[in-house]
Length: 398
Ligand code: LLP
Image (cartoon, rainbow, N blue to C red):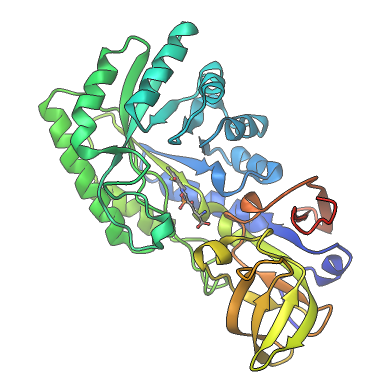
């Protein structure tokens, strides 16, 4: 049976594990860079939260992207992987003092600030170090993205960002603080967005807000539009590299920029999702009353997206080669929500078959429960490697 995967190597590796196709990752990075380079003021940051695996980070940093971090740990991981601190932006509603200090010590490019209390703490901590912190404000543009409710973030009332109606007073407050340098606006309307109209709406809103600020003589150097470009989960083979061309074009056409302004992007999923698969083994095929259950050795502790968001990942039996049967594909965890998919066709399964859960490179490994994470190099090819997934709740001693 034809497959993308090095099956013999997989058979020799303990399951479950994440397998990353770094050839596809490099191709994706090339593509995002080339498409962004068509516009001389576009700057792309990789949203580290999507996958913080050191080897993956290193490949992305070598590709020359900046980093978008949401914690002190991510800033440290990004710098260890070689991202220059001058290309790091730091977002998050709950930045702790040590994280702010880490960012100040590293002289990162910019804090994406989400509240006035946070602004004041950054000012205090910068003052103590005799530094000035560059800040952008994250504004809620009230643009509803057509995506899952749990990953929509741009609406008026939610924990992220600052309401549009508060934008001017907050910027005025920043301009009055000695150790703060206001440099721009930050937005993020949600994730897994495939409809470019959502980004067009964001552009329109940014244009309006820019007009308001211009009328008050407030200078804006940077416009950060966040991330959010979606990928094809149903058919990863069809679109292994997302449509960066249309994405950047939407912003190039939609934004009315002022002279000298730079546009920043924070892309996570679209860069790393398609290169990753969770590889798991069939433990048992169990006949229920009306259903067949395919019980695999990975659980929600290895890939939580289906349990948390009802997210669907393409599930393939990569060793069977037999016609499909309909299964509920479930994990071994003692939770009823430990289900990857219900009533889906999968090549007929037998104990020992290998299953690939596709498009799992983003928000997969990073959201897994991990203890004692061991990294194993897959001897498949030196451009491809795997990481062992070990789960917390399945370990008896814990
Ligand atoms: N910038 C900000 C401020 C963000 O909050 C996010 C993602 C990104 C950039 C990157 O977005 P992306 O390009 O990856 O869509 N765990 C969820 C996704 C949460 C996304 C949170 N924010 C999932 O598994 O679908």
